[in-house]
Length: 417
Ligand SMILES: Cc1ncc(COP(=O)(O)O)c(C=O)c1O
Image 1: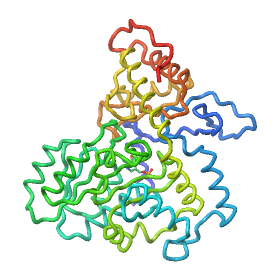
Image 2 (image 1 turned 90 degrees about the horizontal axis):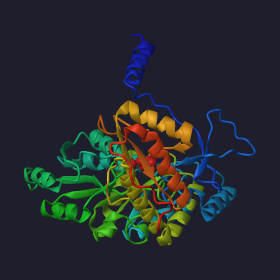
Image 3 (image 1 turned 60 degrees about the vertical axis):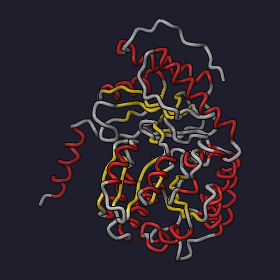
Image 4 (image 1 turned 30 degrees about the horizontal axis):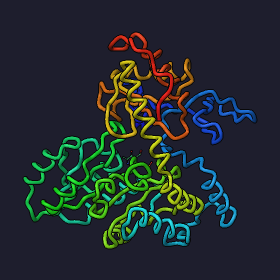
């Protein structure tokens, strides 16, 4: 077999369909954000020219640039160095790791937590372990679930039924068709990042109780932003203590890297005991664990910043409506602006970057369904009123003749917060 030819064919086919992955190199300087430098030459100049505004960062609360978090990370690096030196059971558990797990459990008001190198690994490792080890378990999974959830379920080879996105009636129908005494688990997200849709978590809990199912909730895009002190949508719905396993990331609302699960002691100990993806890998850098703890402490105090994110997101949505640019409306902070066409979305993204110094990465199939290509806007506390007004006028000029309806009303000069 000609392996290289075989492999190259697959890449060529993928590229020919327009799915080739290219990445934009960004210097996300902490002192100038949202102004950044896009640098295809990878030259870090002493005097940075930062003329591009970034609108697609998942650092939702700017915590990756928080001075106290940065200081904490540097302090710990200077104390214990960079790497952890091992897996959790071979010298890679430090007081920073243990403290972070306590902080996460306290944050969600649950018994225990377990940290992983990312939320992707946390999902994959936990679900594959749980669904492999609970004999004959049947999985009920939302059709828009993230790749990490799907991979975890697939790896377990458990029987799985897919329910329509956020469709509780469909979920109930599928649950009712399954034998009552068969083990079951409902796998879903509280906030779907590609559409910005939120789940009615309390209703999932009600159904889980009725049909005696476990619940696995991915709160990756919600932690830090929703619920009291940013404790997530489950907390907002008053059922945080009734979800069997909550998954979250340290990378978005908390601005660091790493993922976790939290829940009752018995379930967390189960995953700790049996998940290969938890134990057979080097633990996260101690400094990251310490920085994440600091970030969790600070994020809980950021009520004003949370309010700002939502009021700015609402302002952007209203402006988009005024200029006639289609987007998926929801009560979340995520704004998917629809370009529909796969080739058009790339043109839009390139025009925004090259002509308007506005960076919004294109999202298209297979990440989202065909014909629903989009640009996904995420606003942070550091985006100003001027930034927002410039974004809207850049979008309007880029969409230009493609706009579905004529624009008659002028833009509001500034947002009211
Ligand atoms: C819903 C969902 N779950 C999990 C992940 C993985 O998170 P992490 O970046 O911490 O691996 C993502 C990543 O964006 C996600 O969107």
